[in-house]
Length: 333
Image (cartoon, rainbow, N blue to C red; front, side, top):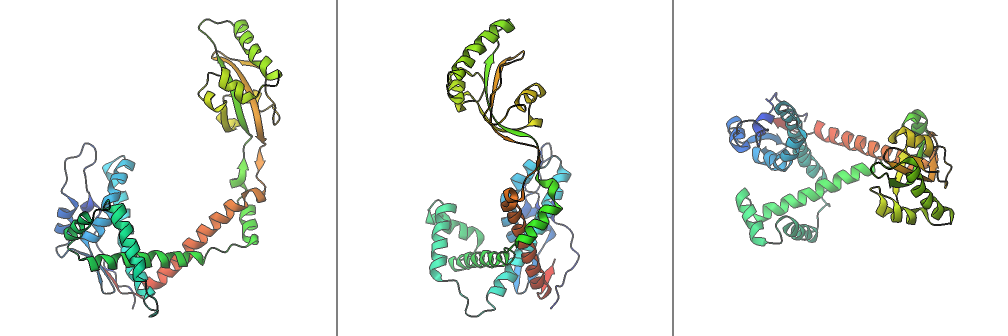
């Protein structure tokens, strides 16, 4: 049977769990939802009733993060409406997926799996306190048997989605090469250097000659064969001193021009002469170099494969869900 859908007023404003900054206190989500849905029903999928409490339970933990991400009440409401729609659809899909699982009468979730999941849930969500677990069930008005059923359906839902995702996980070398050739701009890299530096701070009123003399003493140790990192830990006055002056990979555009003009003349493994600035004297070491240009395909092949696998998995899962939805009875209120 085709899905039966009826126009419904968005309920995002009714799910507002807490006021935005500067707004007056709002009614709780329960109060507001109950005003809109007198029977407490949001949708029906097959024989399963999806209630206001089902939606509220899924959305509630996510509201604080939405508030942090939102700059205005309008932005918050828009994000909450989108989340609400996703949650309702996911709850519907969950029903359809579980039903699909049981079409094969031989399929069953072993009781031991559910026992293990319940034990882990009591530990992680109820601090290993069975009385808190039972209090939670009472607050929802459900039995232990009903809660076990929820856990079983969660396991089925996750298993079935994983199985569908795997159907899009085989990527041929030709597809990888085609993607690379069609998206070469994505794999362009700037000039970059794996950088170490030593900073010798300029004392108040210190002359260039005096600063140059201090830098010369450091250079003398390096010329004598001392390790650059060890010398940085000994003398440097920058924030990475304890790491031997290691600043990791830096792009040309990340650096001050007077620094990059010196650093990017260095070959791999070479260091600079002291560069004097108003802040002090700087010595640079180019531990490694990457020159501007497109990365070779062999270097980005794993990245491309991951992207294509994710893309294929999403498409395979969406096609599967659309098929389930087409053949299901779904009614929105």
